[in-house]
Amino acid sequence: MMKNRFLTCTFLAVTLGLLGAYIGGHMTSMLHNQNCQNQSWGLKVMCNVWVTPGATWQGSTTGLWMGTVLGAFIAGSITHTES
Image (cartoon, rainbow, N blue to C red; front, side, top):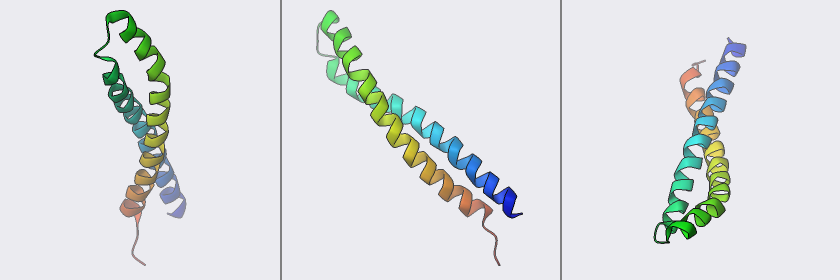
């Protein structure tokens, strides 16, 4: 039982971490790209190209950590057994 609990917690933590990285990267990228909306077309494209990699990295890293921590907590709560 202990081995299955360990695998379940690990799988859920990694899965929610990757999901959090994906969502966090997209959200942060969209928020940072809103700063480029009041530029003309050429400057808007250059601004988006400049801002997107850093914003995606920042959001993905934050989402990965938060998703992993929350996933581990949720999985531990679900698989907890009373002794």
